[in-house]
Amino acid sequence: MTGLLDSFWRAVAYCLHPRVIALSFLPLIVTVAISLGLGYFYWDASLDLVRGWLESSSLLGTVGGWMQSMGLGSLRTVVAPLIVIFAVTPALVLVSLMVVALMMTPSLVGMVAERRFAGLERKHGGSFLASALWSLGSLLLAAIAMVASVPLWLIPPLIMVLPPLIWGWLTYRVMAFDALAAHASREERREVFRRHRLRLLGIGVLTGYLGAAPSIVWASGALFAAAFVILVPVAIWIYTLVFAFSSLWFAHYCLAALEQLRAERAAVPVPVRAGVVDVPLALGDERTPQPRHPPA
Image (tube, rainbow, N blue to C red; front, side, top):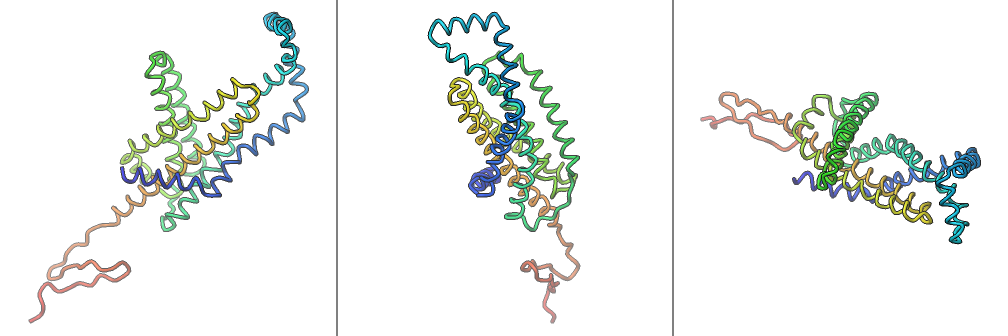
């Protein structure tokens, strides 16, 4: 429990580092760049397509007539742009977060290793391809579990438990692997997973619950369309901070666990030879055999 809390507070402190804050703004930059590019080439065509669909729908035509009779006809002009924004924004968010995830996690793990575990040997037990395959397999299993558990969401308590639990399992599998990929061997990674499985799952579940915070902001943007353009970037930034925090928490905990594992394996007792006693000396001093009895 001490290691869990220690890594938690270290992750919180690292979130205030200028490098982490700079990385957290990358999704906004990526999203704005993609949005400007798509808007320049496809905005007018998208509006014409949506307006044609709105005019061809009898139900929407009835709603539009009702809005006109209530003096809200001016709102019809903003419906098509809002539909385009609502349709495109989730895809932009996913793309930007995927790009930033590939850039952020290695950088954060490297920062933790550089500042706290500089002497920890890198054994490169997980390559980029292995990490990608591991993440893809874990994502597939989590998706299957999520779909299979949907009927259970009808039971009120389980909807607050099952999705964060599945998301936490996925987070623990992916981020713990990435945190140990550069430093641990394959055998060491498996041993860390075996020893600390429940704690790592707990970190994943807690960060999974934290991941619900941007969804609240996102929902607010859906309810208050006027603030959509402001609230959605805020939600993206909060989500990126949660992602950075979880990466830092896993990095601190996993690298500390790896360091402890190697220290335990290195502490091999030296056999006592007949007539001498091994006296522990300061680090860096040679071990000198001491006679058991002073010579007569």
